[in-house]
Length: 86
Image 1 (tube, helix red, strand yellow):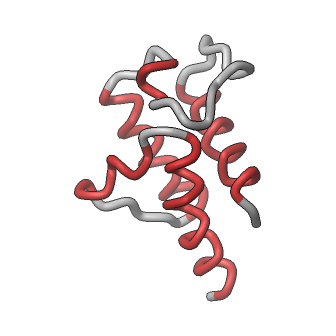
Image 2 (cartoon, rainbow, N blue to C red):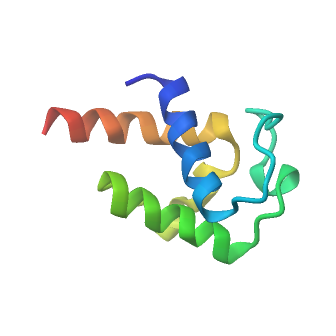
């Protein structure tokens, strides 16, 4: 698992939640909500899909760690690696 794979997982989840969004030009370092038409419910859906599909829990206090693709990768990569080691 690497950061690019984590970013792709997040983009795949967004594609499921918001199929009308064009994800081809998403910038890694800009807040997702500034680039895409995602509301708070969409964001919660992302968190729920991370738990459902990958067994990763994101506490509400840490939601800000998921603002951009880069921050998602930095935050989630250790969680994916810990899950793989378990």
